[in-house]
Length: 287
Image (cartoon, rainbow, N blue to C red; front, top):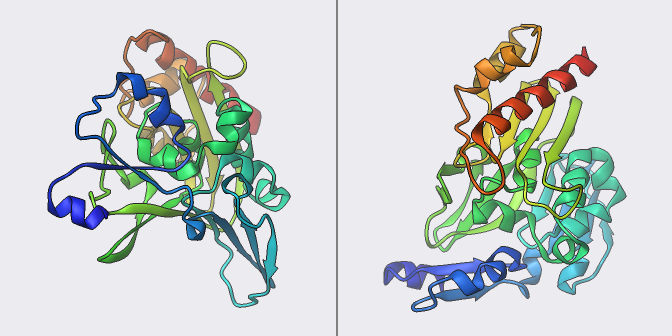
């Protein structure tokens, strides 16, 4: 269907949990709006975790498929693969996934009320392209890759190379996000923090995910740029071993990668200042 629609230059919006689409429903232009419901595509509703000696395969209970199965696959590489319909709740309910990738559970618990957690999907959070997305920073901090599929085949794109601008990406009109792949857990620093107007069920004013491993530092921020963004100038300084005397040192480096705005939730100055302070004090704890 996507291939046919793309050939006719028709816009089709795939939806999984629909948590973003339905919230904005009353503000959307309905003429010519075509939605493609993926909720019953069982092949997308799995969470595969290849580990030493076995392959963990947990179905997405929120989408009405078998909740648990265990298959042996001794030769598998240890990557976690979240199917396109894997929900936040699925990850929260998996002790194995939460232990290996704790930031996933941390973000899932803060993404919204239980109704959002049980319907919202990680792939949908990526595809929607909101700069305030709560799931994307932690995925990016884990060097996640997006698996795109169409009638032309499959391809993988690094999540930090997926977005091209505000709510735009490299995904072609005939492609679906069918999975998200995370490399084996090998981080000695993992941290996520979200700042909202209240402690729960709030859209992010500013957020940050930090990780450190063999490939160096990852500093990923949301609600401070047109997309969720890696703060590469700061990462490079951290990888070079630079130390910082205060938040202003951090803030000066952040300006190379972030461009916060004033809006109904916060101000650009607040976002810059709070992000710098969050990062500085967390790094101080890691020292």
